[in-house]
Length: 150
Figure 1 (cartoon, rainbow, N blue to C red):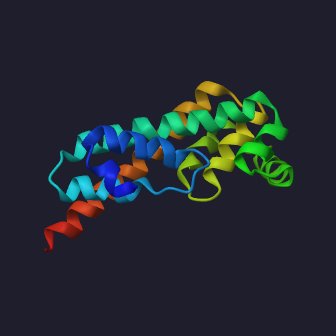
Figure 2 (figure 1 turned 180 degrees about the vertical axis):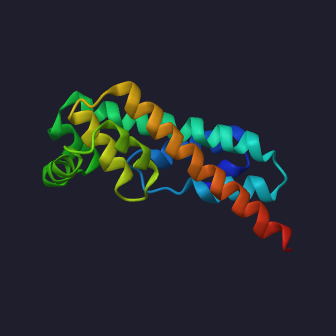
Figure 3 (figure 1 turned 90 degrees about the vertical axis):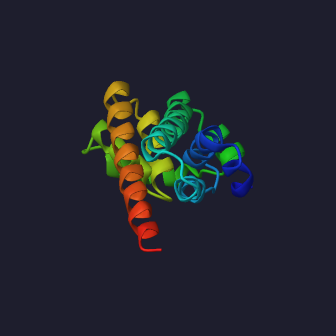
């Protein structure tokens, strides 16, 4: 599936990044690195990946904000205990923890919990986007550096 998304260039990257930031187990880094290896513009790749991933992260946040744990359990296989556990960890940290929304495994759950807690939306969105941007920046220049060796 990821190879097919790479065939669509920047728009495939945007979609892969969006899907990867939702509850789906998908890695946008494969498409991201493939496009950089194919000679696509690094800054455009960073932009499309950041936008797609941020929209996906915002989706997680707003799913949590709906406050319907039953929906999250039924449709996204997120257990109430996981959300409660994440909320207790985030209580003292606040909305700035959205920065870590890029982390594999816990990032999506963290954003859902921040939404459920009704954390400050602008701060969550700005910090989340900054974290996702920095992640793709590091991956892009790391990929470019590795490719320069070959």
